[in-house]
Structures are given as structure tokens and as C-alpha cells.
Length: 521
Image (tube, rainbow, N blue to C red; front, side, top):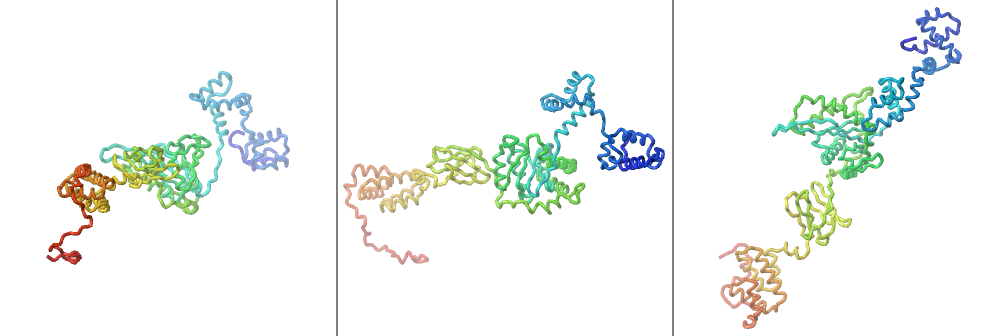
């Protein structure tokens, strides 16, 4: 009875004819079986503990299992001995340098009559397969997005230098529809990873509930099968798009089997089809990848009456969460001490940003994006600046400075003229003359500061006489007026009528002259 087992429906016909008392020769002619086959089956029936009626009542698979019990080799003593050591062998294979040949050599030392190397490997492989069964997962529409980087790279040529620039390929897929996305980026760094993920979200037109990344450093800081430490940038991204990050376990590719399979599909449907093309920039390369992925998603799937794009558009796209109005900006975090000049120094920009002076000497938490710098202290935002890339420059808000420093920034000829007008008429005239001098502005500001301070602690009449004396002698310095006051030189000058009027004269134009629209001479 060598060769392929016969159909059980045919064997049941054999049993019925034999039960009816037909001869073996008749059975051979009626069923088209060989005499050897008929004899072999009748011998099996005779040795069976079951009656012919009981065998006829069995379903075909059960009858086949009864008549074809399998290879008796699995019932050998040497197999039982090998089976008892399977758990040990599986554990040893995980150790460094241990392979199957080494285990087989040790096995043959204790069992000289044991299995050959090929049979040893076969039985061990069967055990490894049986120990790791696969489970079919049922995915919900819009629930998860699997992401990974392909192991192999694509490239383009820098037209300026002729250098070949190798790029990593980001791959993502929605497990429900198996809809895929791929693009090339310069690296697997955090910035490029988040950028690719953001473009993926906008390509899909929505965000899923759960993000399932691999354990790459851009996504996971410290891997753990139960509670991995997720990179803060990816957490910020997930919060912005209202997603949960659930990383795959380390060395468990079945956790994201669909994206692993999608990587293989990208190799055959993108890499292979672009192998003879040359690209000269990243944008052109990504345009070609986008076109190949579009065709891939529109290709009819095997054993299914639809393509990936049809299933995605029909059942999944409308259940994805709406994207936020504001695009995500990658956040960077720092903790810095506020310097005595009430600024923090952001070394990435080599730039200084101001903080309210009351926080000098305290720690500040810095959160900065590509466009803004947020500064926090004691749980509250104390400053906000537009990010500047001016090397060594200062971004200073006037409100952050103390009153003395604010006064310093406010200094100008107009500022001092307004202050002088409120103090004294002669001081106002003197300040006007001071700013008519051809001197460095800082020197003029200091002279005015000195005069205003001197006015505050001097006798108003004496100070008024000193100013008039300075104007008369055309000496507009702080030191001149200070000497006049200290030496009491104003005592020798008659009292000044601060409210005196000009003497009568003919050179009077009157107010009508100044309110006319056009001057008439």
C-alpha cells in the first residue's frame, strides 16, 4: 500500500462490498484498486478493534486517522529520549555561540545510536515551530498605525559634488486595510523621524488611535516589554494628534508583522522598480517613491476582490480622527539658570533671551520650537520670544528690565527735553543747547542725567540762576553748574523773576502769523 493514501469514500465502498460478502477479485475490478492495496486495507480492518459498521459510521478524517496512524518512527525509544531534552535545547540555542551542530554533537556523545544530524535538526525545528504558534489578530478600522524603517537604503547623487547620498526609508501601514506609506529621509534622527510621521498623517488625512513604532532610538529611549520609555518628542507628537504610543516588544517582529511584510513589498514594488533610475535630489526621489506606492496601493490583493486603496477609502479613512488645525512643531527642552543680566543663553542658537529681572539666579525651564522660545518658572510661563538665530545677539523685552534699566533704554533727546520742561524753563533751554553740540550721544545723556539729579537736590532759584549763567557763558557742562552752586556764585546775581515778560519791541508777529497755512513775508 505504498504511495498516496486512497480516498476514504473509496475505502468505505471497499468495506461495504467486503461486508456484503463479495470476493477480493470482484472488489479489485469494481473499484479499480490493486490486489495488494485491497489486501493491505482488509488486513488493517481485521487487526482493528472496531467493527466494519463502526468504521463506516466514522467521518472521513477520523477513518483516515484510524487506518493511517502515521510514521511509527515517532514511537521509537530514541525519539522519546530526544523529546525529553527539547526544552533544554531550546534554552541553550539562546546562548551566545551555541548552534544546532554543537547540540547534535553533544547529543551523539551520550546517544551513539541516536538520530543523524539532519533528523535531529528536523525534529528540533518541529519543536521550535510548535512552541511558537502564530495568532491571527483582528484589527479595527482606524485603530492602529504600524511604523518602521526599512533595513536597506535608497540614494541620490549630489549634482554639485557627485557624492552619493544614502537615505533611510520610512514605512508605515494601517493594519485594517493594509494601506501603505513610504518616503525617504536623510537619517533616522528624531527630527527626520517626526517629519516623516507628520507627512504620513497628512497623507492619510487623519490620525489613528494607536501608534505602534519599532524600538528605534528616535521613538524609544529605553526598551521594555511592558512599560518602555517613549521619547519625549514622540510623546509630544502623539499628544498633538491625540494618539497613544504602544511600541512593539523587543525582538518580537510578530507584534508588527504587517509592517514587516510591507517592508518586503516596498523592496519589490519600489526599490526593484527604481533600481535603474538616477536621482539628483531628495524631493525627486520621494516623488518617484510616492508614485510607486500609489500603484502598490491600487494593485488588487491576492485572494481578495479589492485593492488596499479601495478598502482604505471605503471603510477606514472616514473613521480616522481629524487632524489639528495647527501643524506640529518639534519641541526641545532645557533647564537653564537666569544670569545677572536677566537673560538666559540658548547655546543651540548662541543667542540671549530676556527673563523678568525678579527671576535672576533662579532655574528656568526652556521649551523651544523652530519658531518660538517659551520660558517657564515655578509652573508659569514668564517669557515668550520669537526664536532668533543671530549669533551673540540679544532678544530683550523692555518689560523684563528693572526701572533703572528701562530708563537706560528710554534715553533719547526727546526724553530729556520732556523731563527738563517739567523741571525748569532755563533747564529746558540748556538741554536744547546741550543736544546741539557735536558730541557722542552717551556723553550728552550723562550730562543731562547729572543736571536732572542736581536740580532735584538744589534750591530752585539758585539752580535757575546757574543755568542762565551757563547759557550766558556758553558753557553747557554739568561740572560748570556744579561749581557755580558749590561756590555760591549765584548769590552775587540779582534775583531772577521766573515769570518775567519780554521787553516791549517792534519785532512781534503775533499768533495770527503762526496759524496761517502759508507763510507771507
